[in-house]
Length: 475
Image (cartoon, rainbow, N blue to C red):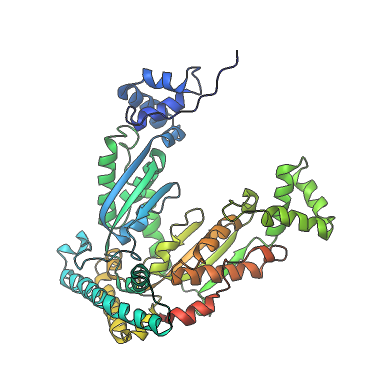
């Protein structure tokens, strides 16, 4: 007799995350149903299973079925970068675009609490918050007056959003944030190892606290997590190594976003992969056949791949058979949005004043440019003094206005998602500038895909620079 199909939830109120993980793991060798397996398990027997198979034999994929929802509050935005650096997790954080920070809503690192630079640190952060809060009504009045003069009145919500998009440039990395995290035990174990090996005391402490909190629901899967000497030596030794490097200057300082390398045959790779997926030939045979296709046949493949895709349809996975490598200079506020795109590979340099700061045009229009420049220069001087004692902790005083260099590798599918989302009119102007420039660079390499790879608006990155920035790199 044919068994009836069953689809149901395992109740996480009745079963712990570790028990649910074991329930799924046992189905590989047990003929019982999932709910029958779960009924026979206890937290003790589940712990024993994980000790033997996950910890002892390294069957780590089992831990992916144990999921936690972590609430992390009052941590610095600098620490959030490490928290959100894990690809296989979900995050929602307090936004500097929609919320106003209180003057005391910042973190003081242990490295500086008893330091000779403690007063300098607090004076600098307080100064940045004071100017941030004083700028809000000035910018609101400037925006409101400009829109009224143009006959385009804004709602209170729109006015607030426009104002905070610019005010956030004052906020230092010390500003506190709240982050909601959904993560499985396998990814959490990896995340904790990174946190416990981090150069910042705050991040190491967060790692220990998350480990303690998680142990109540994952008594076995995270209890052996510790710092990783390999990670620590990689950072320390490479930092020392780079100090002795004296590379010749590239002369490309003005090229703030560059496509430094890419797959030159990416269009052919994508279309051949499409033929491979839905056909029966080998990839090599498809390559030969592709060279013999008539123009109208290639157009049909492009129609299948791009034209028939609806606005909310996810592109076919065959668009991943390629790679592009970007070297990008963006302000810290833009990076905080860029880092959420975790399906690409990102390497970011330490936050410092080395690459200069940006000045939003609205700051100039509101008569705050001198005030803003002075604040950024004071923050930079404080950084350099604090860095004499603790280079890592010195980053806390750096505001969102300062630029940061990011190396990003992605495939075309990931790039399409990023560009579609971040060139939309409601995206922040700083990330729109980045996304539009990346789209332009990608289109320059295309022959067949060009008509199908356009941002949702006609806005260019040059127009964004002219409309929203007085300057993008001031030292």
